[in-house]
Length: 271
Ligand SMILES: C[S@@+](CC[C@H](N)C(=O)[O-])C[C@H]1O[C@@H](n2cnc3c(N)ncnc32)[C@H](O)[C@@H]1O
Image (tube, rainbow, N blue to C red; front, side, top):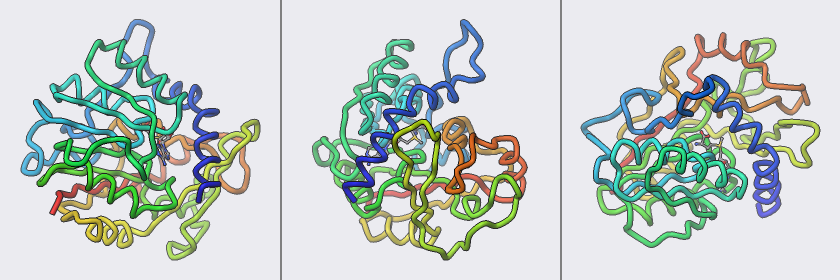
């Protein structure tokens, strides 16, 4: 497990600049870079006002914050304390840059989502976008999220939809069984020292793990078509697969999103 963690962290340090360039690919000179609030109406699957009417005045943590888009978005929309945690120093540098660009209050700290460097019961809402699928120990991610949330706190996490991940983006055909071993290795770029290891866990497994960690799962969202929202935009372009292709076949993937949901998103509350 430590080997996977080290390799994934190295990969993220190597990939960070190019990954953040994907986030900003559609940002014209002089425009503000994207910083979508992950709890807002335009997030994948929409907001859930009965569970979280607003982030205004709330203490929010982002687990695996990457370039900080979600954290900064929550801060812009009025969250009180915002903390983003990520194990990649390169990603955190981008996050701090984005925060400074917007001039909002958000703290970015280096840490692992399976051992958060944060006190118990300190947040009202936690968000994690396209991170848990890279972590071998899902239970530890969820129990740490539970630990840092207050009673009645809300956890929103999204992962690439495991059915979508069964497709070969080039042929549009199933390349693996939904029931196969969830572990998969992705070559992002042959020039990088590390590959990325991910776990395409089944919907039921994710649901049951969240319940076992002490959450009530309140929504399981599988947004249709291109309703994936901008907080997952860059994360979609996750490079080539085991076969060692060269780059992200993004346009083919757009066709797939008409057939299967790209994102799987859970809303859960602390039991
Ligand atoms: C696909 S990015 C998602 C970040 C952000 N939500 C986004 O959409 O750009 C995954 C992030 O998770 C971080 N990450 C992966 N495993 C982690 C772990 N075990 N602990 C902390 N961060 C981790 C990576 O460094 C990377 O920044």
